[in-house]
Image (spheres, rainbow, N blue to C red):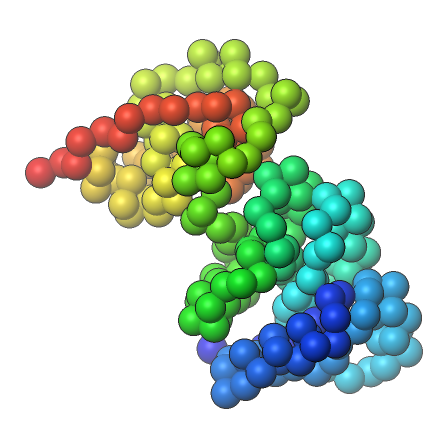
Length: 224
């Protein structure tokens, strides 16, 4: 991947400097940094330099403020994707950011390798979020939302429930197909139906729906 122009927004100058050192000799090219989204928009409004392909927003942990920041940055840089970094794992903030189109939501203590790998996926159009989410939910570290209607799960077929369970583990279509003993094309068909029935837009939101509703299904045995 060629170097992608990057802007860092939010956090302290010390944290931004440390994050900037992470991306040295990486596929990312830091072109600017700002204290907050408003400063970012104002500071680049009249400039004709490189347009960012990725904006890293350092959150203060407030779901509404983070969602507003993502929307503001996306409105100003329509072609850029936004990655939110948070100090703590918050299912409310995660959901709020993904609902407005964030390309990813990760914890700010991630390693350099994880950051670069996640960025590559985001720039390819994928949505990333912490693998710790499922584990934290299972151990009760995250509060379940009362906004999800678990009765919707009753409309899903057994196969769709199997796939939903795989999604909560972060499995790709290839892994799901292998685990369930079906083709990737069949996985995509079930996935499309699953997403339509529960009223979400993508696989990430489907996994969040499952976690919010307290869904728990033993994974199907690995196909021989």
